[in-house]
Length: 268
Ligand code: WA2
Image (cartoon, rainbow, N blue to C red; front, side):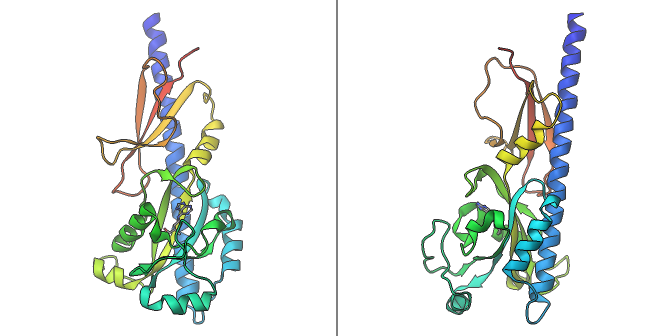
């Protein structure tokens, strides 16, 4: 009898964990797909129309009205690539000076990635050079070299919540799928990205599921298997070790590996 009860507990753990992993992965995937569509929107209306047929107001309105399509993103934005030689002209045209993510005037750099369009929910990154943050900078460089969606490791976003940033490159020309890295870098116009506010939005997602009270869920970035990084959940082990179940997660960036660990909350 005891054995049967234990087995039932374990089966419950496995099915609840798989349900959560599937939901998270699916909501992640739809959010990524919609950001991809936004990158195409910017390429089409900012770069294929002369003069550009997109401005901050239109971007803000469109992204606000379509935010339901991106359930795990707290906001999206477009950062334009500006090379140093073009900085003065860019700043004069915009009427503001490029600032770092610490809100200081940007020192001289080879190039910058100031945010020119933003969803109102992340309007605080307007005008900031996204290359001035280590995680954002790595994402920008990796996305434009590959032409694909990339994710940062988990870190504290400017919202002060733990999360990850997603970046898609935008190019001046339609590149063939087999374009070389140098061609991609040379053709880069900017970066369309969004912030996955994992800490608050995944909390919301899990709260709606049955069994939430009895389950402890953690998500890790296990890209470096000897140094797992917490992406969601508490880092401290909760009391006596209890049986756990691990589900692999695929967030669409083959460079990163993630998994979910579920266990029962220890009864008080
Ligand atoms: N967006 C919102 N909050 C953040 C953040 C970010 N990056 N980085 C840190 N906190 C415009 O990859 C281009 C968005 C970066 C895209």
